[in-house]
Structures are given as structure tokens and as C-alpha cells.
Image: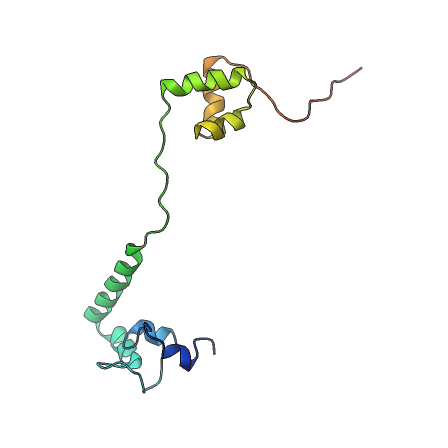
Length: 132
């Protein structure tokens, strides 16, 4: 049997008297909750539709309070980015390095560079030339 130990269930903040407390291991008849035990709450959760909706709404509210990390706003390409792309390409920077500098995807930078007629700069090991 997984779950938590009896000592863990006596810590302040344990959700006694709720279906969550039952799911976390408080299944005995002796529950420190004043109104109803966790076992009674689980039985009510399974049989009382209105109580079930109330519990599920409270769970949803708890999860929406902490939505997690926010996503970055999408950046739109502007004329100033064209100038930066021209300048960095003239310095010999690769599309990948330019994309990290400007905050766009490398495919977006590559497409813009092609539209502007700029040459592609490659980094890394030079390619072998064929000798016939």
C-alpha cells in the first residue's frame, strides 16, 4: 500500500474531511476533521452530484491560482530587424546566431535573409573540396 504514514496525516495543512484527504491516505474512521471524516467525504463525493461539482470547482480554482510560467509574447518582425539582420550578416554571423540575437526562429531569419537577397554565412568546419 502506497500513501502517506499516519504521522504525515497529523501535520497541519493536511486536507482532512475532504475527498482529497481520502485520496492521500486518511481512510480510517478516526479522522481529526470536525464535520465529516475523509471516508464520509469520499462517499458523499461519489454519491452527491452537487457536492461533487463543488469539490471539483474548488480543485479547479486551486490550480488556476498558480498557472505556472508565462509564455513570452510573440515578437513581430519590424523594419529595425531588417537593419540588424543586414548588419549582422555583413559581420559574417550565421542565421542561427542571428536568430538567437534577435529573438526569432532560425527559419524565420533564413527566410527573411533570402527575401533580402543576402548571402548565407556558414560556421564550423569548412567543407571538403572534391578533386577529380
